[in-house]
Length: 208
Image 1 (cartoon, helix red, strand yellow):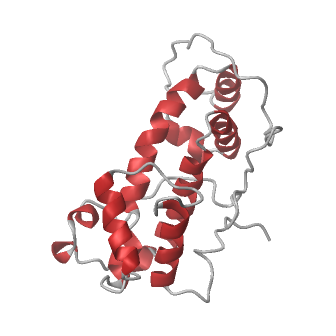
Image 2 (image 1 turned 180 degrees about the vertical axis):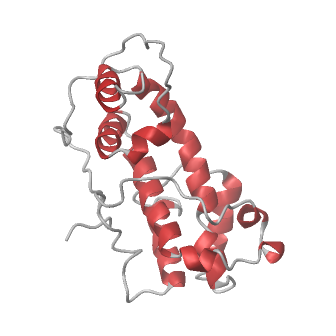
C-alpha cells in the first residue's frame, strides 16, 4: 500500500493534476460574504490536492507533508495525549491542546509508514520523524525556530528516553504550529489564483 515513507506527491516536471487544475495565474480576489480559510482548503480532498500542487511550484511541499504526517502521529496517540500532566512538562507541551487537530481528509491520504508501524515504539517513531523533518540536513527538513529544533535535536540524542509516552505524544505539536504558520504565506498566494477561485466557486457555491 501507499505510505508516507516517501513523498506521496512527488515533485516532478508534471505534478499530479487534481480534478481542477491548470496554469496558476494571478487574479483579483472577489469580495464575498463567505471567506474561504486555509482550514477549509486542507479539509477538502480536492482543495488539499490543489494546494499541494501549488506548493510544488514554491518548492515547499515538505511543509504540508510534515503537517500531514505529524498530525497523523498526534491522532494516533490521542489517548496518550489526554493523559499528559502539563504541570510537569516543558513550555512547548504546556501550550498544546491535546484534543485539537488540523482537519485533513485522512480517509484519502496515505498512512505514514512510520506512525502506523506496529514494530516501532513511540520513542522510535519520534526518532524517525525527527530524522525525516527536524535534524539538520534531513530529507524534508522543516524551517523551524532555533529553540524548537535544538530541543528536539537534544531529545533525539537521548532517543527520547527522558520523555514519558504522553510527552512524546505531544512533542511535535510545536512543529505543526510553526510549520502551519509558514504555509499561510503560500496560502494567500494560492488564494489569488484562478485554480483556487474555480475550486472555491464549485465547493462553496451555496454559501456565497
